[in-house]
Length: 409
Image (spheres, rainbow, N blue to C red):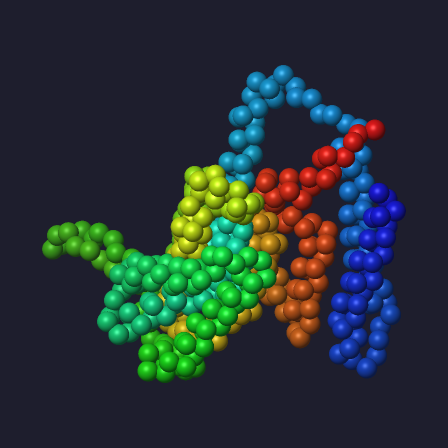
């Protein structure tokens, strides 16, 4: 085992060296060997630490058996529950007080991260739970944005009036895209969904009379919150436009929390178990009585619904929308969030959304090479931890099934 890990260490180190060469000296005519060796040394140290951790874990699995103490047996349920409650409460508290200590730029990045949390969780239904590789998911995001924009500019509908219509239209488009792909799997499914995503973008880009083409739509009103007011003339409803960044941040935070709760409930429901059965073996699921056609269409529809909500908020926040906001690269980023966080893992996707959206901002000083650093992080992560940052229990068992079945000495 150690020899195999050493071989991987050499290969991965060489691969990372190739990736990092442009960041070390291509921009200037002089090459700094010290800087190169320091950078490579950091990554080699990471790989060596990973080798040590894997070796220790493998020895623990082979020789150690952990027995529960009487205290754990008696109060195990409560002990296991408290850390989760404290963790969730702490993260929620940090998210709530974040705008109080951040500037407008950081708040805007936080809003973008929360939008991608909603997108990642929506795609998790299609890819993570149902096992359908969708490379055109950003099309549903565009449908939500343009639905609100057109309804608000043409008919004067408010955000709250246009949002249900956007969700319904997104679900219809999801079913239209999903129906022709019901009999497809793997690469064929990915190519067809990619084509549908590009079709939606090109329609938005070329239908000048409806979408204003590449110029986009602008002038949409921000969301409005209504609250009771007890003035001198009696009871009345007052309105508050969400114009400031902190107000928009709290609004998308509530949307993200509701999305997390919704996806969590779906994952633990009978529908969620049906999606997982289709992902594992569609033929066996159909023979067991699962209506695969309707269940797969439901996955597309619900995933599109969450993306439509995020798209409507995005258009309302900017008061502007453009077809160039919905390129194929955006679908790739959302898919990377799902894979990096852990397929089917809700907390993993939430953390991955913040990592992948905030990481390019951290590496903005590298200018043209920051996306190369982004790719290097993704590649390293997928090599060292393919199950994701916080893998779902089912996914962890799938990827480490061979380790559990190895005979113990």
